[in-house]
Length: 327
Length: 259
Ligand SMILES: Cc1cc2nc3c(=O)[nH]c(=O)nc-3n(C[C@H](O)[C@H](O)[C@H](O)COP(=O)(O)OP(=O)(O)OC[C@H]3O[C@@H](n4cnc5c(N)ncnc54)[C@H](O)[C@@H]3O)c2cc1C
Image (cartoon, rainbow over all chains, first blue to last red):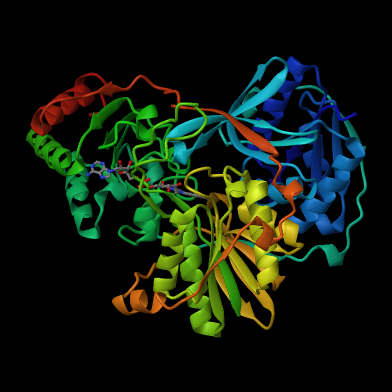
């Protein structure tokens, strides 16, 4: 019978993705509550050091597969390999962190076994012995409890930041090498080198005051209203992704999972809804102010000060007040 | 090049959402709808590929009669014809179920590229395209920022974490999930809207799609829908704009001490 929790460990450039330890931590917690053993799986070639690092966590067994077809990540390679491992080990639960890589292959893996991937959860609870997961819907405006239907194995991923990877219990895992069958035919994706796009040199990570603008600003010409406030406060101007996608502000002023991560003394969000991909880039700010006309906007969940209202009325008033203060 | 682009109709981004009486989804009466954001970029990517390589763009949407609006919008922007997958048995399907229906319809139609948005703005599963690829036995790539096509090979630029990108090639036919913002959306012109009236929208129900009932059995379920918990105690500041401004500045200075 299916038993135990298997955690998928991700790595790139010779480093374990820190986010994978969040899934390890989730597995340790769930394992302790449900009486299940936790094991981990890591793929690659020449990954001995990485395996040793993972084995220093409180995990029963770290399984490794060294195979030249797993040297770089491909959706096909990882799906085939992990499916074969799951067939060998028969875990009840496969846990992952909802990274870009997991988003890329985990739905395929689960589907190949006719299972659902319960993706992007933020927490779990146990009711009458059953695991129930919570996730955001409508871009964080609502939350939902979800459960798997049908037999194990069940596939679950947690949103980055849902568990503390640095709180993993340490231990000494046994390491076991496993093998899988892979060949050129099954791997149809051919990845090239990873690269970074040349970026202009705006470093917002050092800014102590940031005013950030979102799609509530409606039009490019209105950006000026928010820029005036930033100037009056002596703050840097930043934005949510759609503003940069539209080229209303340059890419290097984008905050979020695909932009910069900042932690200023003040982050003033203007017309930003507070999607998780934005929040991960700014939730470490010391004081967060949000101006939004929607009282239910998720940005208010993390704001210290909230103003429900029309930014076109509030922002000019704030600018005037900031200018008064300056004098 | 024959491209099928999947378009989901979702409640408008600024909708006020109310939870239904059963507490397991939202009240869907009185809502207005739009094309899911990243799907609209998928449509634009398809139209640009057609302009470059020739061929045909088919706009596919699964859902109740109202989703015809998004198909018509796509036809007005330049898609050649529509596929509307509609059946009461499709109501409330999970990602696996929806992908099964789409995969069956797409297979019968045949294509070089099947495009979806990277995730929907309502469920946010981010899985439909990937599952469809698996069910169709085709290669896929997610979070796609650019698409090239040459002699049966699709080369895409994928967005990765921490500011990285990566080009990945694969043989066509393939399935791609498109990231928002990869191109500039076009609007329908009056001429486009007129032309759309003559374009075909084919309606297919479960039997016509030929989807096997077993694949529609739920593999996951929503237990409960609720308002999210706040992680911080937010102080809401009220008054006229001028009052709000002076109160906030005072608090930032004397309470939060940011200046
Ligand atoms: C893989 C991936 C990566 C992503 N990376 C990032 C990222 O790095 N950074 C990022 O920001 N996003 C990112 N996103 C996008 C993210 O999911 C959201 O779509 C985006 O953050 C929304 O931006 P927004 O809040 O400006 O717009 P919206 O969600 O459209 O919100 C606009 C807000 O303005 C308010 N508003 C409208 N009019 C007014 C008014 N007159 N006065 C006051 N308020 C008003 C509305 O109530 C609404 O809350 C990513 C998405 C994905 C899938």
